[in-house]
Image (cartoon, rainbow over all chains, first blue to last red; front, top):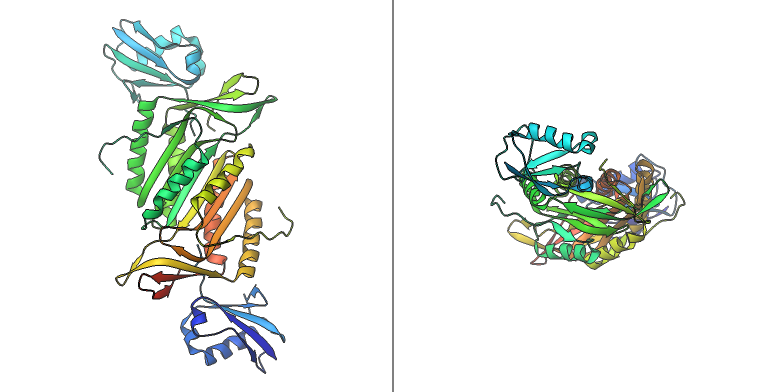
Length: 77
Length: 77
Length: 147
Length: 147
């Protein structure tokens, strides 16, 4: 299935916004594993995902055409 | 001895600024008694005195030429 | 901060928004500041027995008020790591909707600025000999009491 | 306050003192207000390894940020008896000494305005997906982290 990845903050320095074709990934936990394998720099970071503009609080199902944002710790204000 | 009285807030409505000549009043407790006898309207109020620009916290000696301010509860801000 | 230099805090009439803007703008050169906290008191159009407050007329025992404010300032600078603190209070007539009190504290991080501002307002209201006379629309009045 | 009307909070570049003054002045017609609390964040010229911060460049995941801010706003209006609340955060470049955050709360009495302002700032920093990139004078950078 197709997933759109968007990244923010320091994560933009090693993950570009992109559409990817993945198979066998059905939830956000599996997607995190996929991301950390593909972008090892993520492992040292505390980051959060947002699935279709909702911040992921617990493992959530991913469907085709999802947009997933990868967000490092917030530093507004 | 001579004492200068100055008043503030609602107390200005019944005690004018004035110099008075009194005898036998040697401290602020006695002065309060004197004031309340002369201006009974003071009795219902919570007021503080300031002796020579210092707020009176406890009974304090009064000397000749003192300035005593009579201050109702503060309401700044 | 400990030299006995008594600052004036009193302003004749209301404190104007432009004055506050000026005060804020002056801090742009103080680049160690990260957080500013401001409190402003505004005169409310309270209704009392069917009559509305039109203005408050402030008077103060200025010498004692400035001396007390100086002590409070010293205490607050002692207690919190502040970069600066500015305090202005109106004297004379301030109409409803106008600003009568402006407290402005700044620090490197936000918490001390906020805590100091709050504490200054509390102490100022409790300790400064200032009196507000609420003038109603029909020119009668009553003396304000801080709750 | 409960209709789902998402307000924008983002401002391009710094928040100007004149904008803040305008915002204050607009409240003079709201005569039920007695106290205003303001917090402003200012970009600090921090020194890190001998280099000085010259500016912070802010980016945000705007849709989520505005949605979160809406929730926070609802929570705060639920919790405190406020008359109004205004929040502005910069996006893009804000130089040292300039203002990047402006939170403004008003209520009849002072305590709710002050408590609400404090809580909004805390929640905004923790919950809004906004990122600050500290740009040093030599054009290198590091990503800001809220402590």
